Length: 367
Ligand code: NAD
Ligand code: WQD
Image: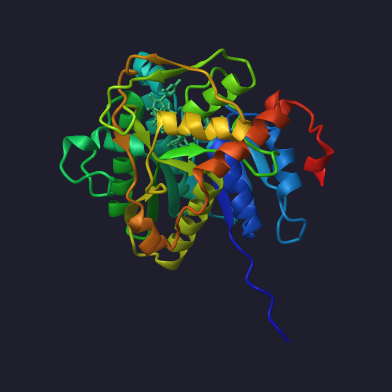
């Protein structure tokens, strides 16, 4: 007789209804992990969950995610969630945060309260309930301008940190808080995942990025230009030292990014003694703003209009990852192309003009 495979352990995902959180939830479910989502819905909607359920494999090993509307800064509410799932939760993936760079400059205290304070509350609650593995959403923004050093592009994890805005500083501080806690508690371990620029949607068109409010990032803005909600893209700066003068970023497909979380989690499970370690999640390939305009224009089949503007405050020339550490240690690398990210984003935008709160109207999407 063959033995049934061991049941996978549950993962608590904070910010699990958000953009990266929803894709990671799906990836965890596909791998057989039960998922408990905690989200305040500050920048997302519960309507993503039925969509995740359409995509998740229809097997008994893959139950629907459990959802708790809960603010991570509310330690009593967090404690209640852990109490309800006593003995089930083995690890936490922590996405919940505020993420607008501009807003963080205007209201830094709110960013420190939610991002840093929320993480401290979460770590305390984990500590109380004996949950000792954490995967944290850090950001390439912790590096700031890596061109200030020689030989630091593409950016390795050993590059000194130097974030240029309050949002980035919350991420750097949280990394330090987690590292200090793990140093003091050697039975814990943790992964600090520094994401480069997440892009794209699910190739089915069923889930994608649907933030509340005005988008800030390049690809969602280009999507709005393509559907006519915006007249043209503003290209911020053409005087950078790149092949066309526009700034360079490392755009990583959201499915690759989600898979990176599963790899990191499996690494923590396999090596309980590794302590706290940072990994870049990027492709290693840089693209300029105009490269992106070209790729997305190819996706939609026409030239998208743009206009040249001065540099955006706080922007840097180049944020391209050196992704070797994740490849060697986590066995993970990005597989999808920029063109796939553009094509998948377009399918999501076209199929969901009202985001998650609209109906799924295309019967092809329900196959
Ligand atoms: P998102 O806004 O879509 O997801 C964040 C989720 O956290 C949202 O669902 C929001 O409702 C929730 N949330 C916010 N405050 C909360 C609170 N106090 N309690 C509970 N839930 C709360 O953003 P995303 O793009 O999916 O980003 C996820 C994480 O990755 C964030 O920590 C972000 O800083 C980080 N990150 C994002 C990017 C990016 O470009 N998208 C890049 C690097 C790092
Ligand atoms: C990409 C490029 C812009 C909008 C941000 C955060 C970072 C991380 C990812 C969370 C830049 C240019 C943009 C526009 C433009 N998030 N651009 N016109 O700034 O690399 O990173 O998101 O951690 O912390 O800072 O991403 O998509 O805003 O910009 O020309 O209307 O596109 O100048 O060069 P960014 P982005």
